[in-house]
Length: 493
Image (tube, rainbow, N blue to C red; front, side):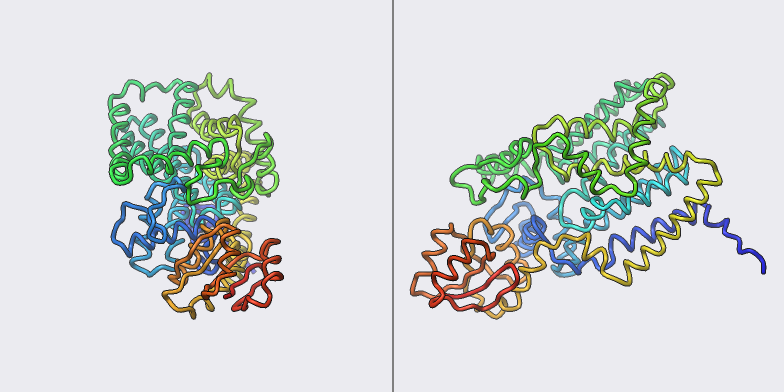
């Protein structure tokens, strides 16, 4: 029996096709199975209200302008567009995020193919696809997935413009910087620091001598300012107070807020993924970046050891990737508060560095690695299609239990509102609004208990924490259970 020829699997076309198929499966399959969660349910509701009201500028939440999320409207616009076409559901709201994250894999493959080689591009793409945190953000309603793509595109456009003397790409660079800022506000400015690091370390000063590099900067305020100016015109200092206050305080961790704020800023730091310890990012990588971590560590070590040679010999692509990987990380590390989500923009650069290590072995070993990753990728894709692995292990599950209340909530008269506690406000109110079109009344714990004591009938929902358990015991003769899950309760007085 003749041996089956497998040479085709080493071709660029096959590897690129495989990357596209695997990325498509991983980012889109069972996308709507897990409920929206955390901030995502709030963002989804804002997008829904934009579509209902026809006001695509103001982020409304339950009819009230809401800016304390500090998010510009680009993510809301994308979800509104998808929801208007497909109807608002888990899938339609997640779809734009998943599509942009899927697109980021293709962009990375094309960039690395051009400036390194297609085998390194294959390794880097597969590594990025199966990077746990990157995949999580790519399937969640958060700004980190789209921001990672716009961040990548801005840097790639800059590098293309300076390396290939194509001035048009400077304008594309600024265009994507504008989109980055309109996605994640001031975090988009990090792109300038990466570019500055590259200009300092490389001998490529062509950008500094090109008038289009400077003129392109004008495109950023053209993209960013109109919405911000319009919001200031409409809401004045209230907009500044909520929108920028969160941003400033997010640098130091979640702030304590003003007394008249609708959100309770005095929440635990851990709930918002803020930490103080210097080793947070290292710990996150150690916990989540397997099996790629050894290749990343060795790749960074090898590049840093050769930094002098890289700079002296003006190995521009290496300098560019190093700046992409390390400049933001250094800035994140300097900040007194650490946020694990910030790593998302670094994973493409980490994937390149790790992919270079895999491609540095002999041709025979590289081919064996390609065969192994091809088999693993195909098997993983089949498993992902056959079983809810991603939707159960990668997608956020915060609302998996509370959402069980929705069928009963849907039976309540549409004019009735659900009384909830202030600490549950953003998540609970968004969940009831998004899935059941049910408004809410948000109260402090003291007000919540007083409401139960009233003779007038009300509907209540809460997590079953210590406070709620005491309430259930204290008012056991007055409370009528309507629905109960492992973690939540819905009742009437």
